[in-house]
Image (cartoon, rainbow, N blue to C red; front, side, top):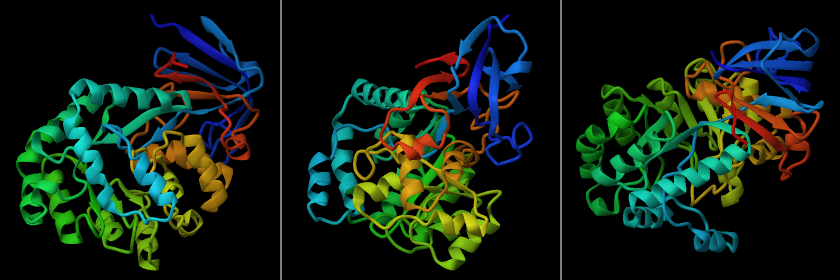
Amino acid sequence: MSTTTSITNIGSLVTNDPALGDGSPLGLIANAAVVIDGDKIAWVGPAAKAPAADEVFDAQGRAVIPGFVDSHSHLVFAGDRTQEFNARMSGRAYSAGGIRTTVAATRAATDAELEAGLVRHLEEARRQGTTTFETKSGYGLTVADEARALRIAAAHTEEVTYLGAHIVSPDFAEDPAGYVDLVTGEMLEACAPYARWVDVFCEKGAFDGDQARAILTAGAAAGLIPRVHANQLSYGPGVQLAVELEAASADHCTHLTDADVDALAQAAGTTVATLLPGAEFSTRAQWPDARRLIDAGATVALSTDCNPGSSYTSSMPFCIALAVRDMRMTPDEALWSATAGGARALRREDIGRVAPGARADLALLDAPSHVHLAYRPGVPLVSGVWQRGRRVH
């Protein structure tokens, strides 16, 4: 039999289940308790009514939230791009081309070096409350390098994305069509066994709408579910393509027409608009307008986009603070998007909420309320993390 643990004396519990709590989207319960049985939530409710458990943890009036769900990251890479960031902060514009620097470093790295980097970033994120991670390939751009990136990632997370279509490989600079053939052919065949998702950077300087459609369609035929890097640097076809192909998410969504917003609202049950404010922060770019999307009825997720070029942060609390300050989200909306929204973007129902039957992924805040995540930006408020029922921080 598994050991049961009661986390009691929770000042404010975010369940993300309106029926369990106060009827709000966050399903708040004051003076709450959570009982964990093995790797699942067994019971949620007022602390005074909590059933007995083998072990008791006293939250001492602090807030508990679902573990963050980071549904967009690029963690299998080598090197960094400090010089590029420094130059950009000194006035140089960001473009997709800097990815080539990371491609060269990643190809030169050993498997052990890539895995050590991945584990380091995962542990860094976990300390900050993230309990589910999606991560992508995209810094190898050869059959062997993309496959090894996914193999390494799959050893550490079940949410693995094939992104051979990050940019056109430097090896195919004069033959982009040939690279699309590789991505949809031999490379896809080698990578599909390790991945759940297929992604494409649909952007000027990367892949146009027709190329992106071919790549996503081929991935879907191989059993992978589409996601799209859409409308980050400019207006383009990415969002409409994501909706058309019933992609799980359209990620970035910075430059949107009214038609794009309407499409995402109409597809709210299928395609999530995943916003990545770390990228705008790190490139001094225009902020995505979360308010516009939410008011239209779109489903919005927040993620870090952790990568060495345009968003080198693993901190979901930091992204929540940015979303509240600069993207016109309320603290409640930002937290929901960083937990339940990320779960929607990964088409998962077992994470992103604290309810009986859900995975026991929780974060304890050294604060009386989740609002402190935005109210006290930059402060390390996460003081405890449970992942699959086990306290890992």
